[in-house]
Length: 281
Image 1: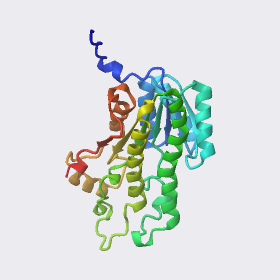
Image 2 (image 1 turned 90 degrees about the vertical axis):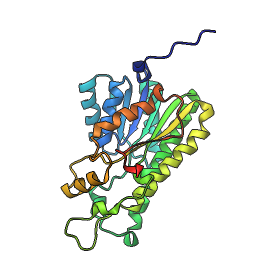
Image 3 (image 1 turned 30 degrees about the horizontal axis):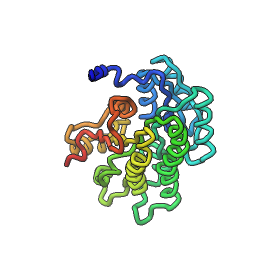
Image 4 (image 1 turned 30 degrees about the vertical axis):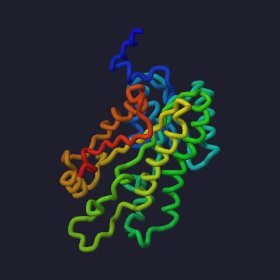
């Protein structure tokens, strides 16, 4: 029997005809992921807590790359919101092929959380701990549960859960100490690191649980995305990172497309770490 011809490199990354749901789609990386998915041929539902920002992210990406994308207000901590998101996607596009769980509380960018980062672990407020669990971990659980039902029915699907290197190794808290500060007052909170570690294990659990249903589940773990951080932080980060620099926001697009496309067809339960070598030492 003749062995079938191997697909071309371009066809491996082709998402034409597929439908993707992206949570946290209006954020720094979410906007990049929307553009990358559209450029690869996928239709995209851009879900975000901020309805206006989700709509703008979708419209901007369509203007640049064509295709079809819609913005939608979704609170991933609410099961009824997540179910409405899945139902609206099916009504509009008739299928769900890809789920990217990108929504998270990022203490660098969320002002209300950033105001409380001065708290040490010993004094970290329980409501902030609970909120991180609700958004970063329970939100991904609900999205996987609701969208996973449809993927099981389809016998096909790809899920990517976005984690962080702080879910792999502990934060280097020295990065957050301000120049001239005798006693450090700014810390990366434990809630972020713990929930991101949980995301990676949720991936492993679901990868084995759904393997027989044709559903692949992997983790994408970015680190060190430049977003106009303070100069002293960037300097310390660059000195600590083997590649000597922070990542551009578009440098996660290729890894995401690899994970959601047929290019990674024999990959599930894995954690793709894209960190400039941060976790190599």
